[in-house]
Amino acid sequence: MSSVSGGNTPGSHSKVSSMYPLLQHVHGKENVDVCRVWKLPLQGGALDLRSIVREWSCDITLHSPDMAKAYLVGDNTGMTATDTMKNTVYRVAKQQARPCGPEEFAARLARHYVNTYPLLTGATVRVRQKSWERYGGKHVHGFTGSPTAPMRVAEAEATRVGGGGVSVKVTSTVSGLELLKTTQSGYEGYIRDEATSLPETRERMLGTCATASWVCHGTVSDYDRVYDRVLDAMLRAFFGPDDKGVYSPSVQYTLHKMASAALDAVPAVASVTMEMPNLHYLPTPPLTKFEDDVYVVAPNPHGLIRATVVRDGVGAASKL
Ligand SMILES: O=c1[nH]c(=O)c2[nH]c(=O)[nH]c2[nH]1
Image (tube, rainbow, N blue to C red):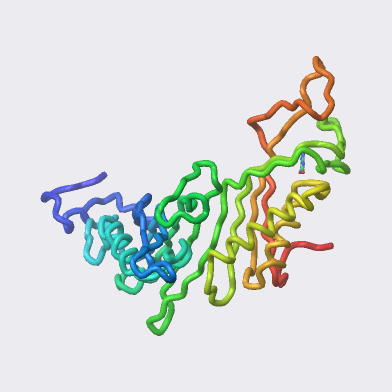
């Protein structure tokens, strides 16, 4: 039975008899939107400026075991207000003197929180970047947005380590990568039993909306370049040469080829995790003759294909 008596001062809350333990807790701020513009002198033009724009939506999660006292006895001493976390996003954006991508910004923010607030054991910052494209590829301050463009996301996990240091792990992600090919895909050789109705085929559509995440080892000087190279390598592996493509015996095989292409293309990439839902384009019912041209777009269900591919295979699960 609970016995709250003597008002609501923090101490009096400790008299509540039902003091169930906390299993875990974090606190943070989500969807902190910020737009950072750098206006840099054009080469040769003393007064002309070229804008670089980055629009980010930031999710901040702070890890602080000591703040269990806020949940248990109402003591907020040493806590970082979520409002302060939000303002810090704007302050750190202001301090970022030279243009940077979401990875660098996430890492800088996460490190800042851990360095500034002593009760934190770590901070996780996720930054989603809106895709603003320079108009015509060369306009000095005009940009167009694309709601259907894949989303670039960076996550930095900062952890306090011994000796007053902070270690930061950075993960880059592209999500919403919609890919479709109309042929050069099949699926054969799987178990056929009384629950199987799917016909084997060497001719089908292959559609997905992929998510790929990668982690680099060592220091990365240009995350934008890594992102472009990883994406380019993955797309080449998915589609194959322009004139004839490349055959896919399964989404699984193609996923592995795409992740491997990214590892080949960028030596700094240590591992790639990919999720490629198999979005089904099915033969139309037999009222119309099916000639691999008119498909039923099946919204649900879709296949789930997910894997992590690593450069250094120590401890890896695959056997061949
Ligand atoms: O590429 C595929 N992988 C599967 O695991 C699978 N399962 C299924 O029904 N169709 C497919 N296609």
